[in-house]
Amino acid sequence: GLVSRNLTALGVKVAPDHIAMVEVGIDGGVVRSQTQSFDALSPLATSTLVGIVEDFIAAATGTRLLGVGVGLPGSVAEQGVGVVDSTQLGWNQVPLGDILRRALELPVVVENNVNALSVAERLFGQGRSYDNVLVVTVGNGVGAGLIADGAIVRGRAGGAGDLGHVPVREDGPLCQCGNRGCLESIIGQGALVSDARSIRLIGPSETIDDLRTLADNGNADAAEIFAHAGHTFGRTLAGAINLLDPEIVVLLGEGVQAWTHWAPSFEKALRSALVPGKRGTPVAVETWQDDRWAQGAAALVLATPFDTHGVAGEQGRLVRERLVASVETPS
Image (cartoon, rainbow, N blue to C red; front, side, top):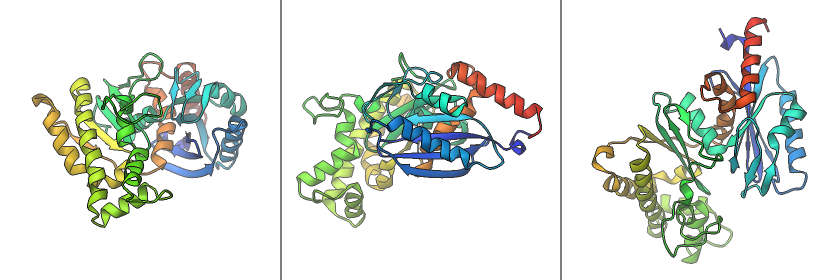
């Protein structure tokens, strides 16, 4: 069968300060992984990225790569073209797909990281039995990926799913997008940390981990910060569920590490704001693994044989050709 042919896909997660890479088998299992520090704002960022990926590919043994998937925070108008706009990375119209394709001579698909994660959830995760899945990530930002009738919803230019920028509070804090009172400016990790610092609960150099430890140890003020975030999140997510009618919601991201402190107020706010017909919508919380992001990027490549909507364009066709060629000729 296909599995015995050692076909793999490469997944690359690009973050502002690191790159996580995985090589995955056709069943989504991770063959090997590696994380490197990286500076997205450096003028040499793209050539550094190419070098890191080339080295990772060079270390592959006895496998045949179908292609490379890249997931990153930002918008990508077309997966198969891969021109990137990202405020988090400081990239403006960077032709990442072209740069990587030329250097690696492999098919390359580029996608928003939450969309990539949603594809992985649909292929290998808790969403695999459903055609309508809402995947929501909570961490520094808040993002969503929507799978409707089995296909990812991308919107006009790949920007669908910006749940973090639902306006929640008229006079709320300033968000990194320039608007006020967006969901992520209230419940993102940076917001929780600054709330905690403003009441001198943690010091200027302490982080979300310190805040979570306080809550774990029974500190009432720390627990209250998470509970308040849970309430706001629950109400906003209820609006999204009422709007989109998913069969299941999958929650993941760095933020779920403190989920025990979010959960009670989240559940209450969510259920009381859902319309009666949607109150039973299941919400599954995935335990957090950083690999999952890179695995999501690899899933972009593995999904192309099933890509009836042609989302990956010409690159998807090239992946399918490699797949067929490897099945016809013994490796």
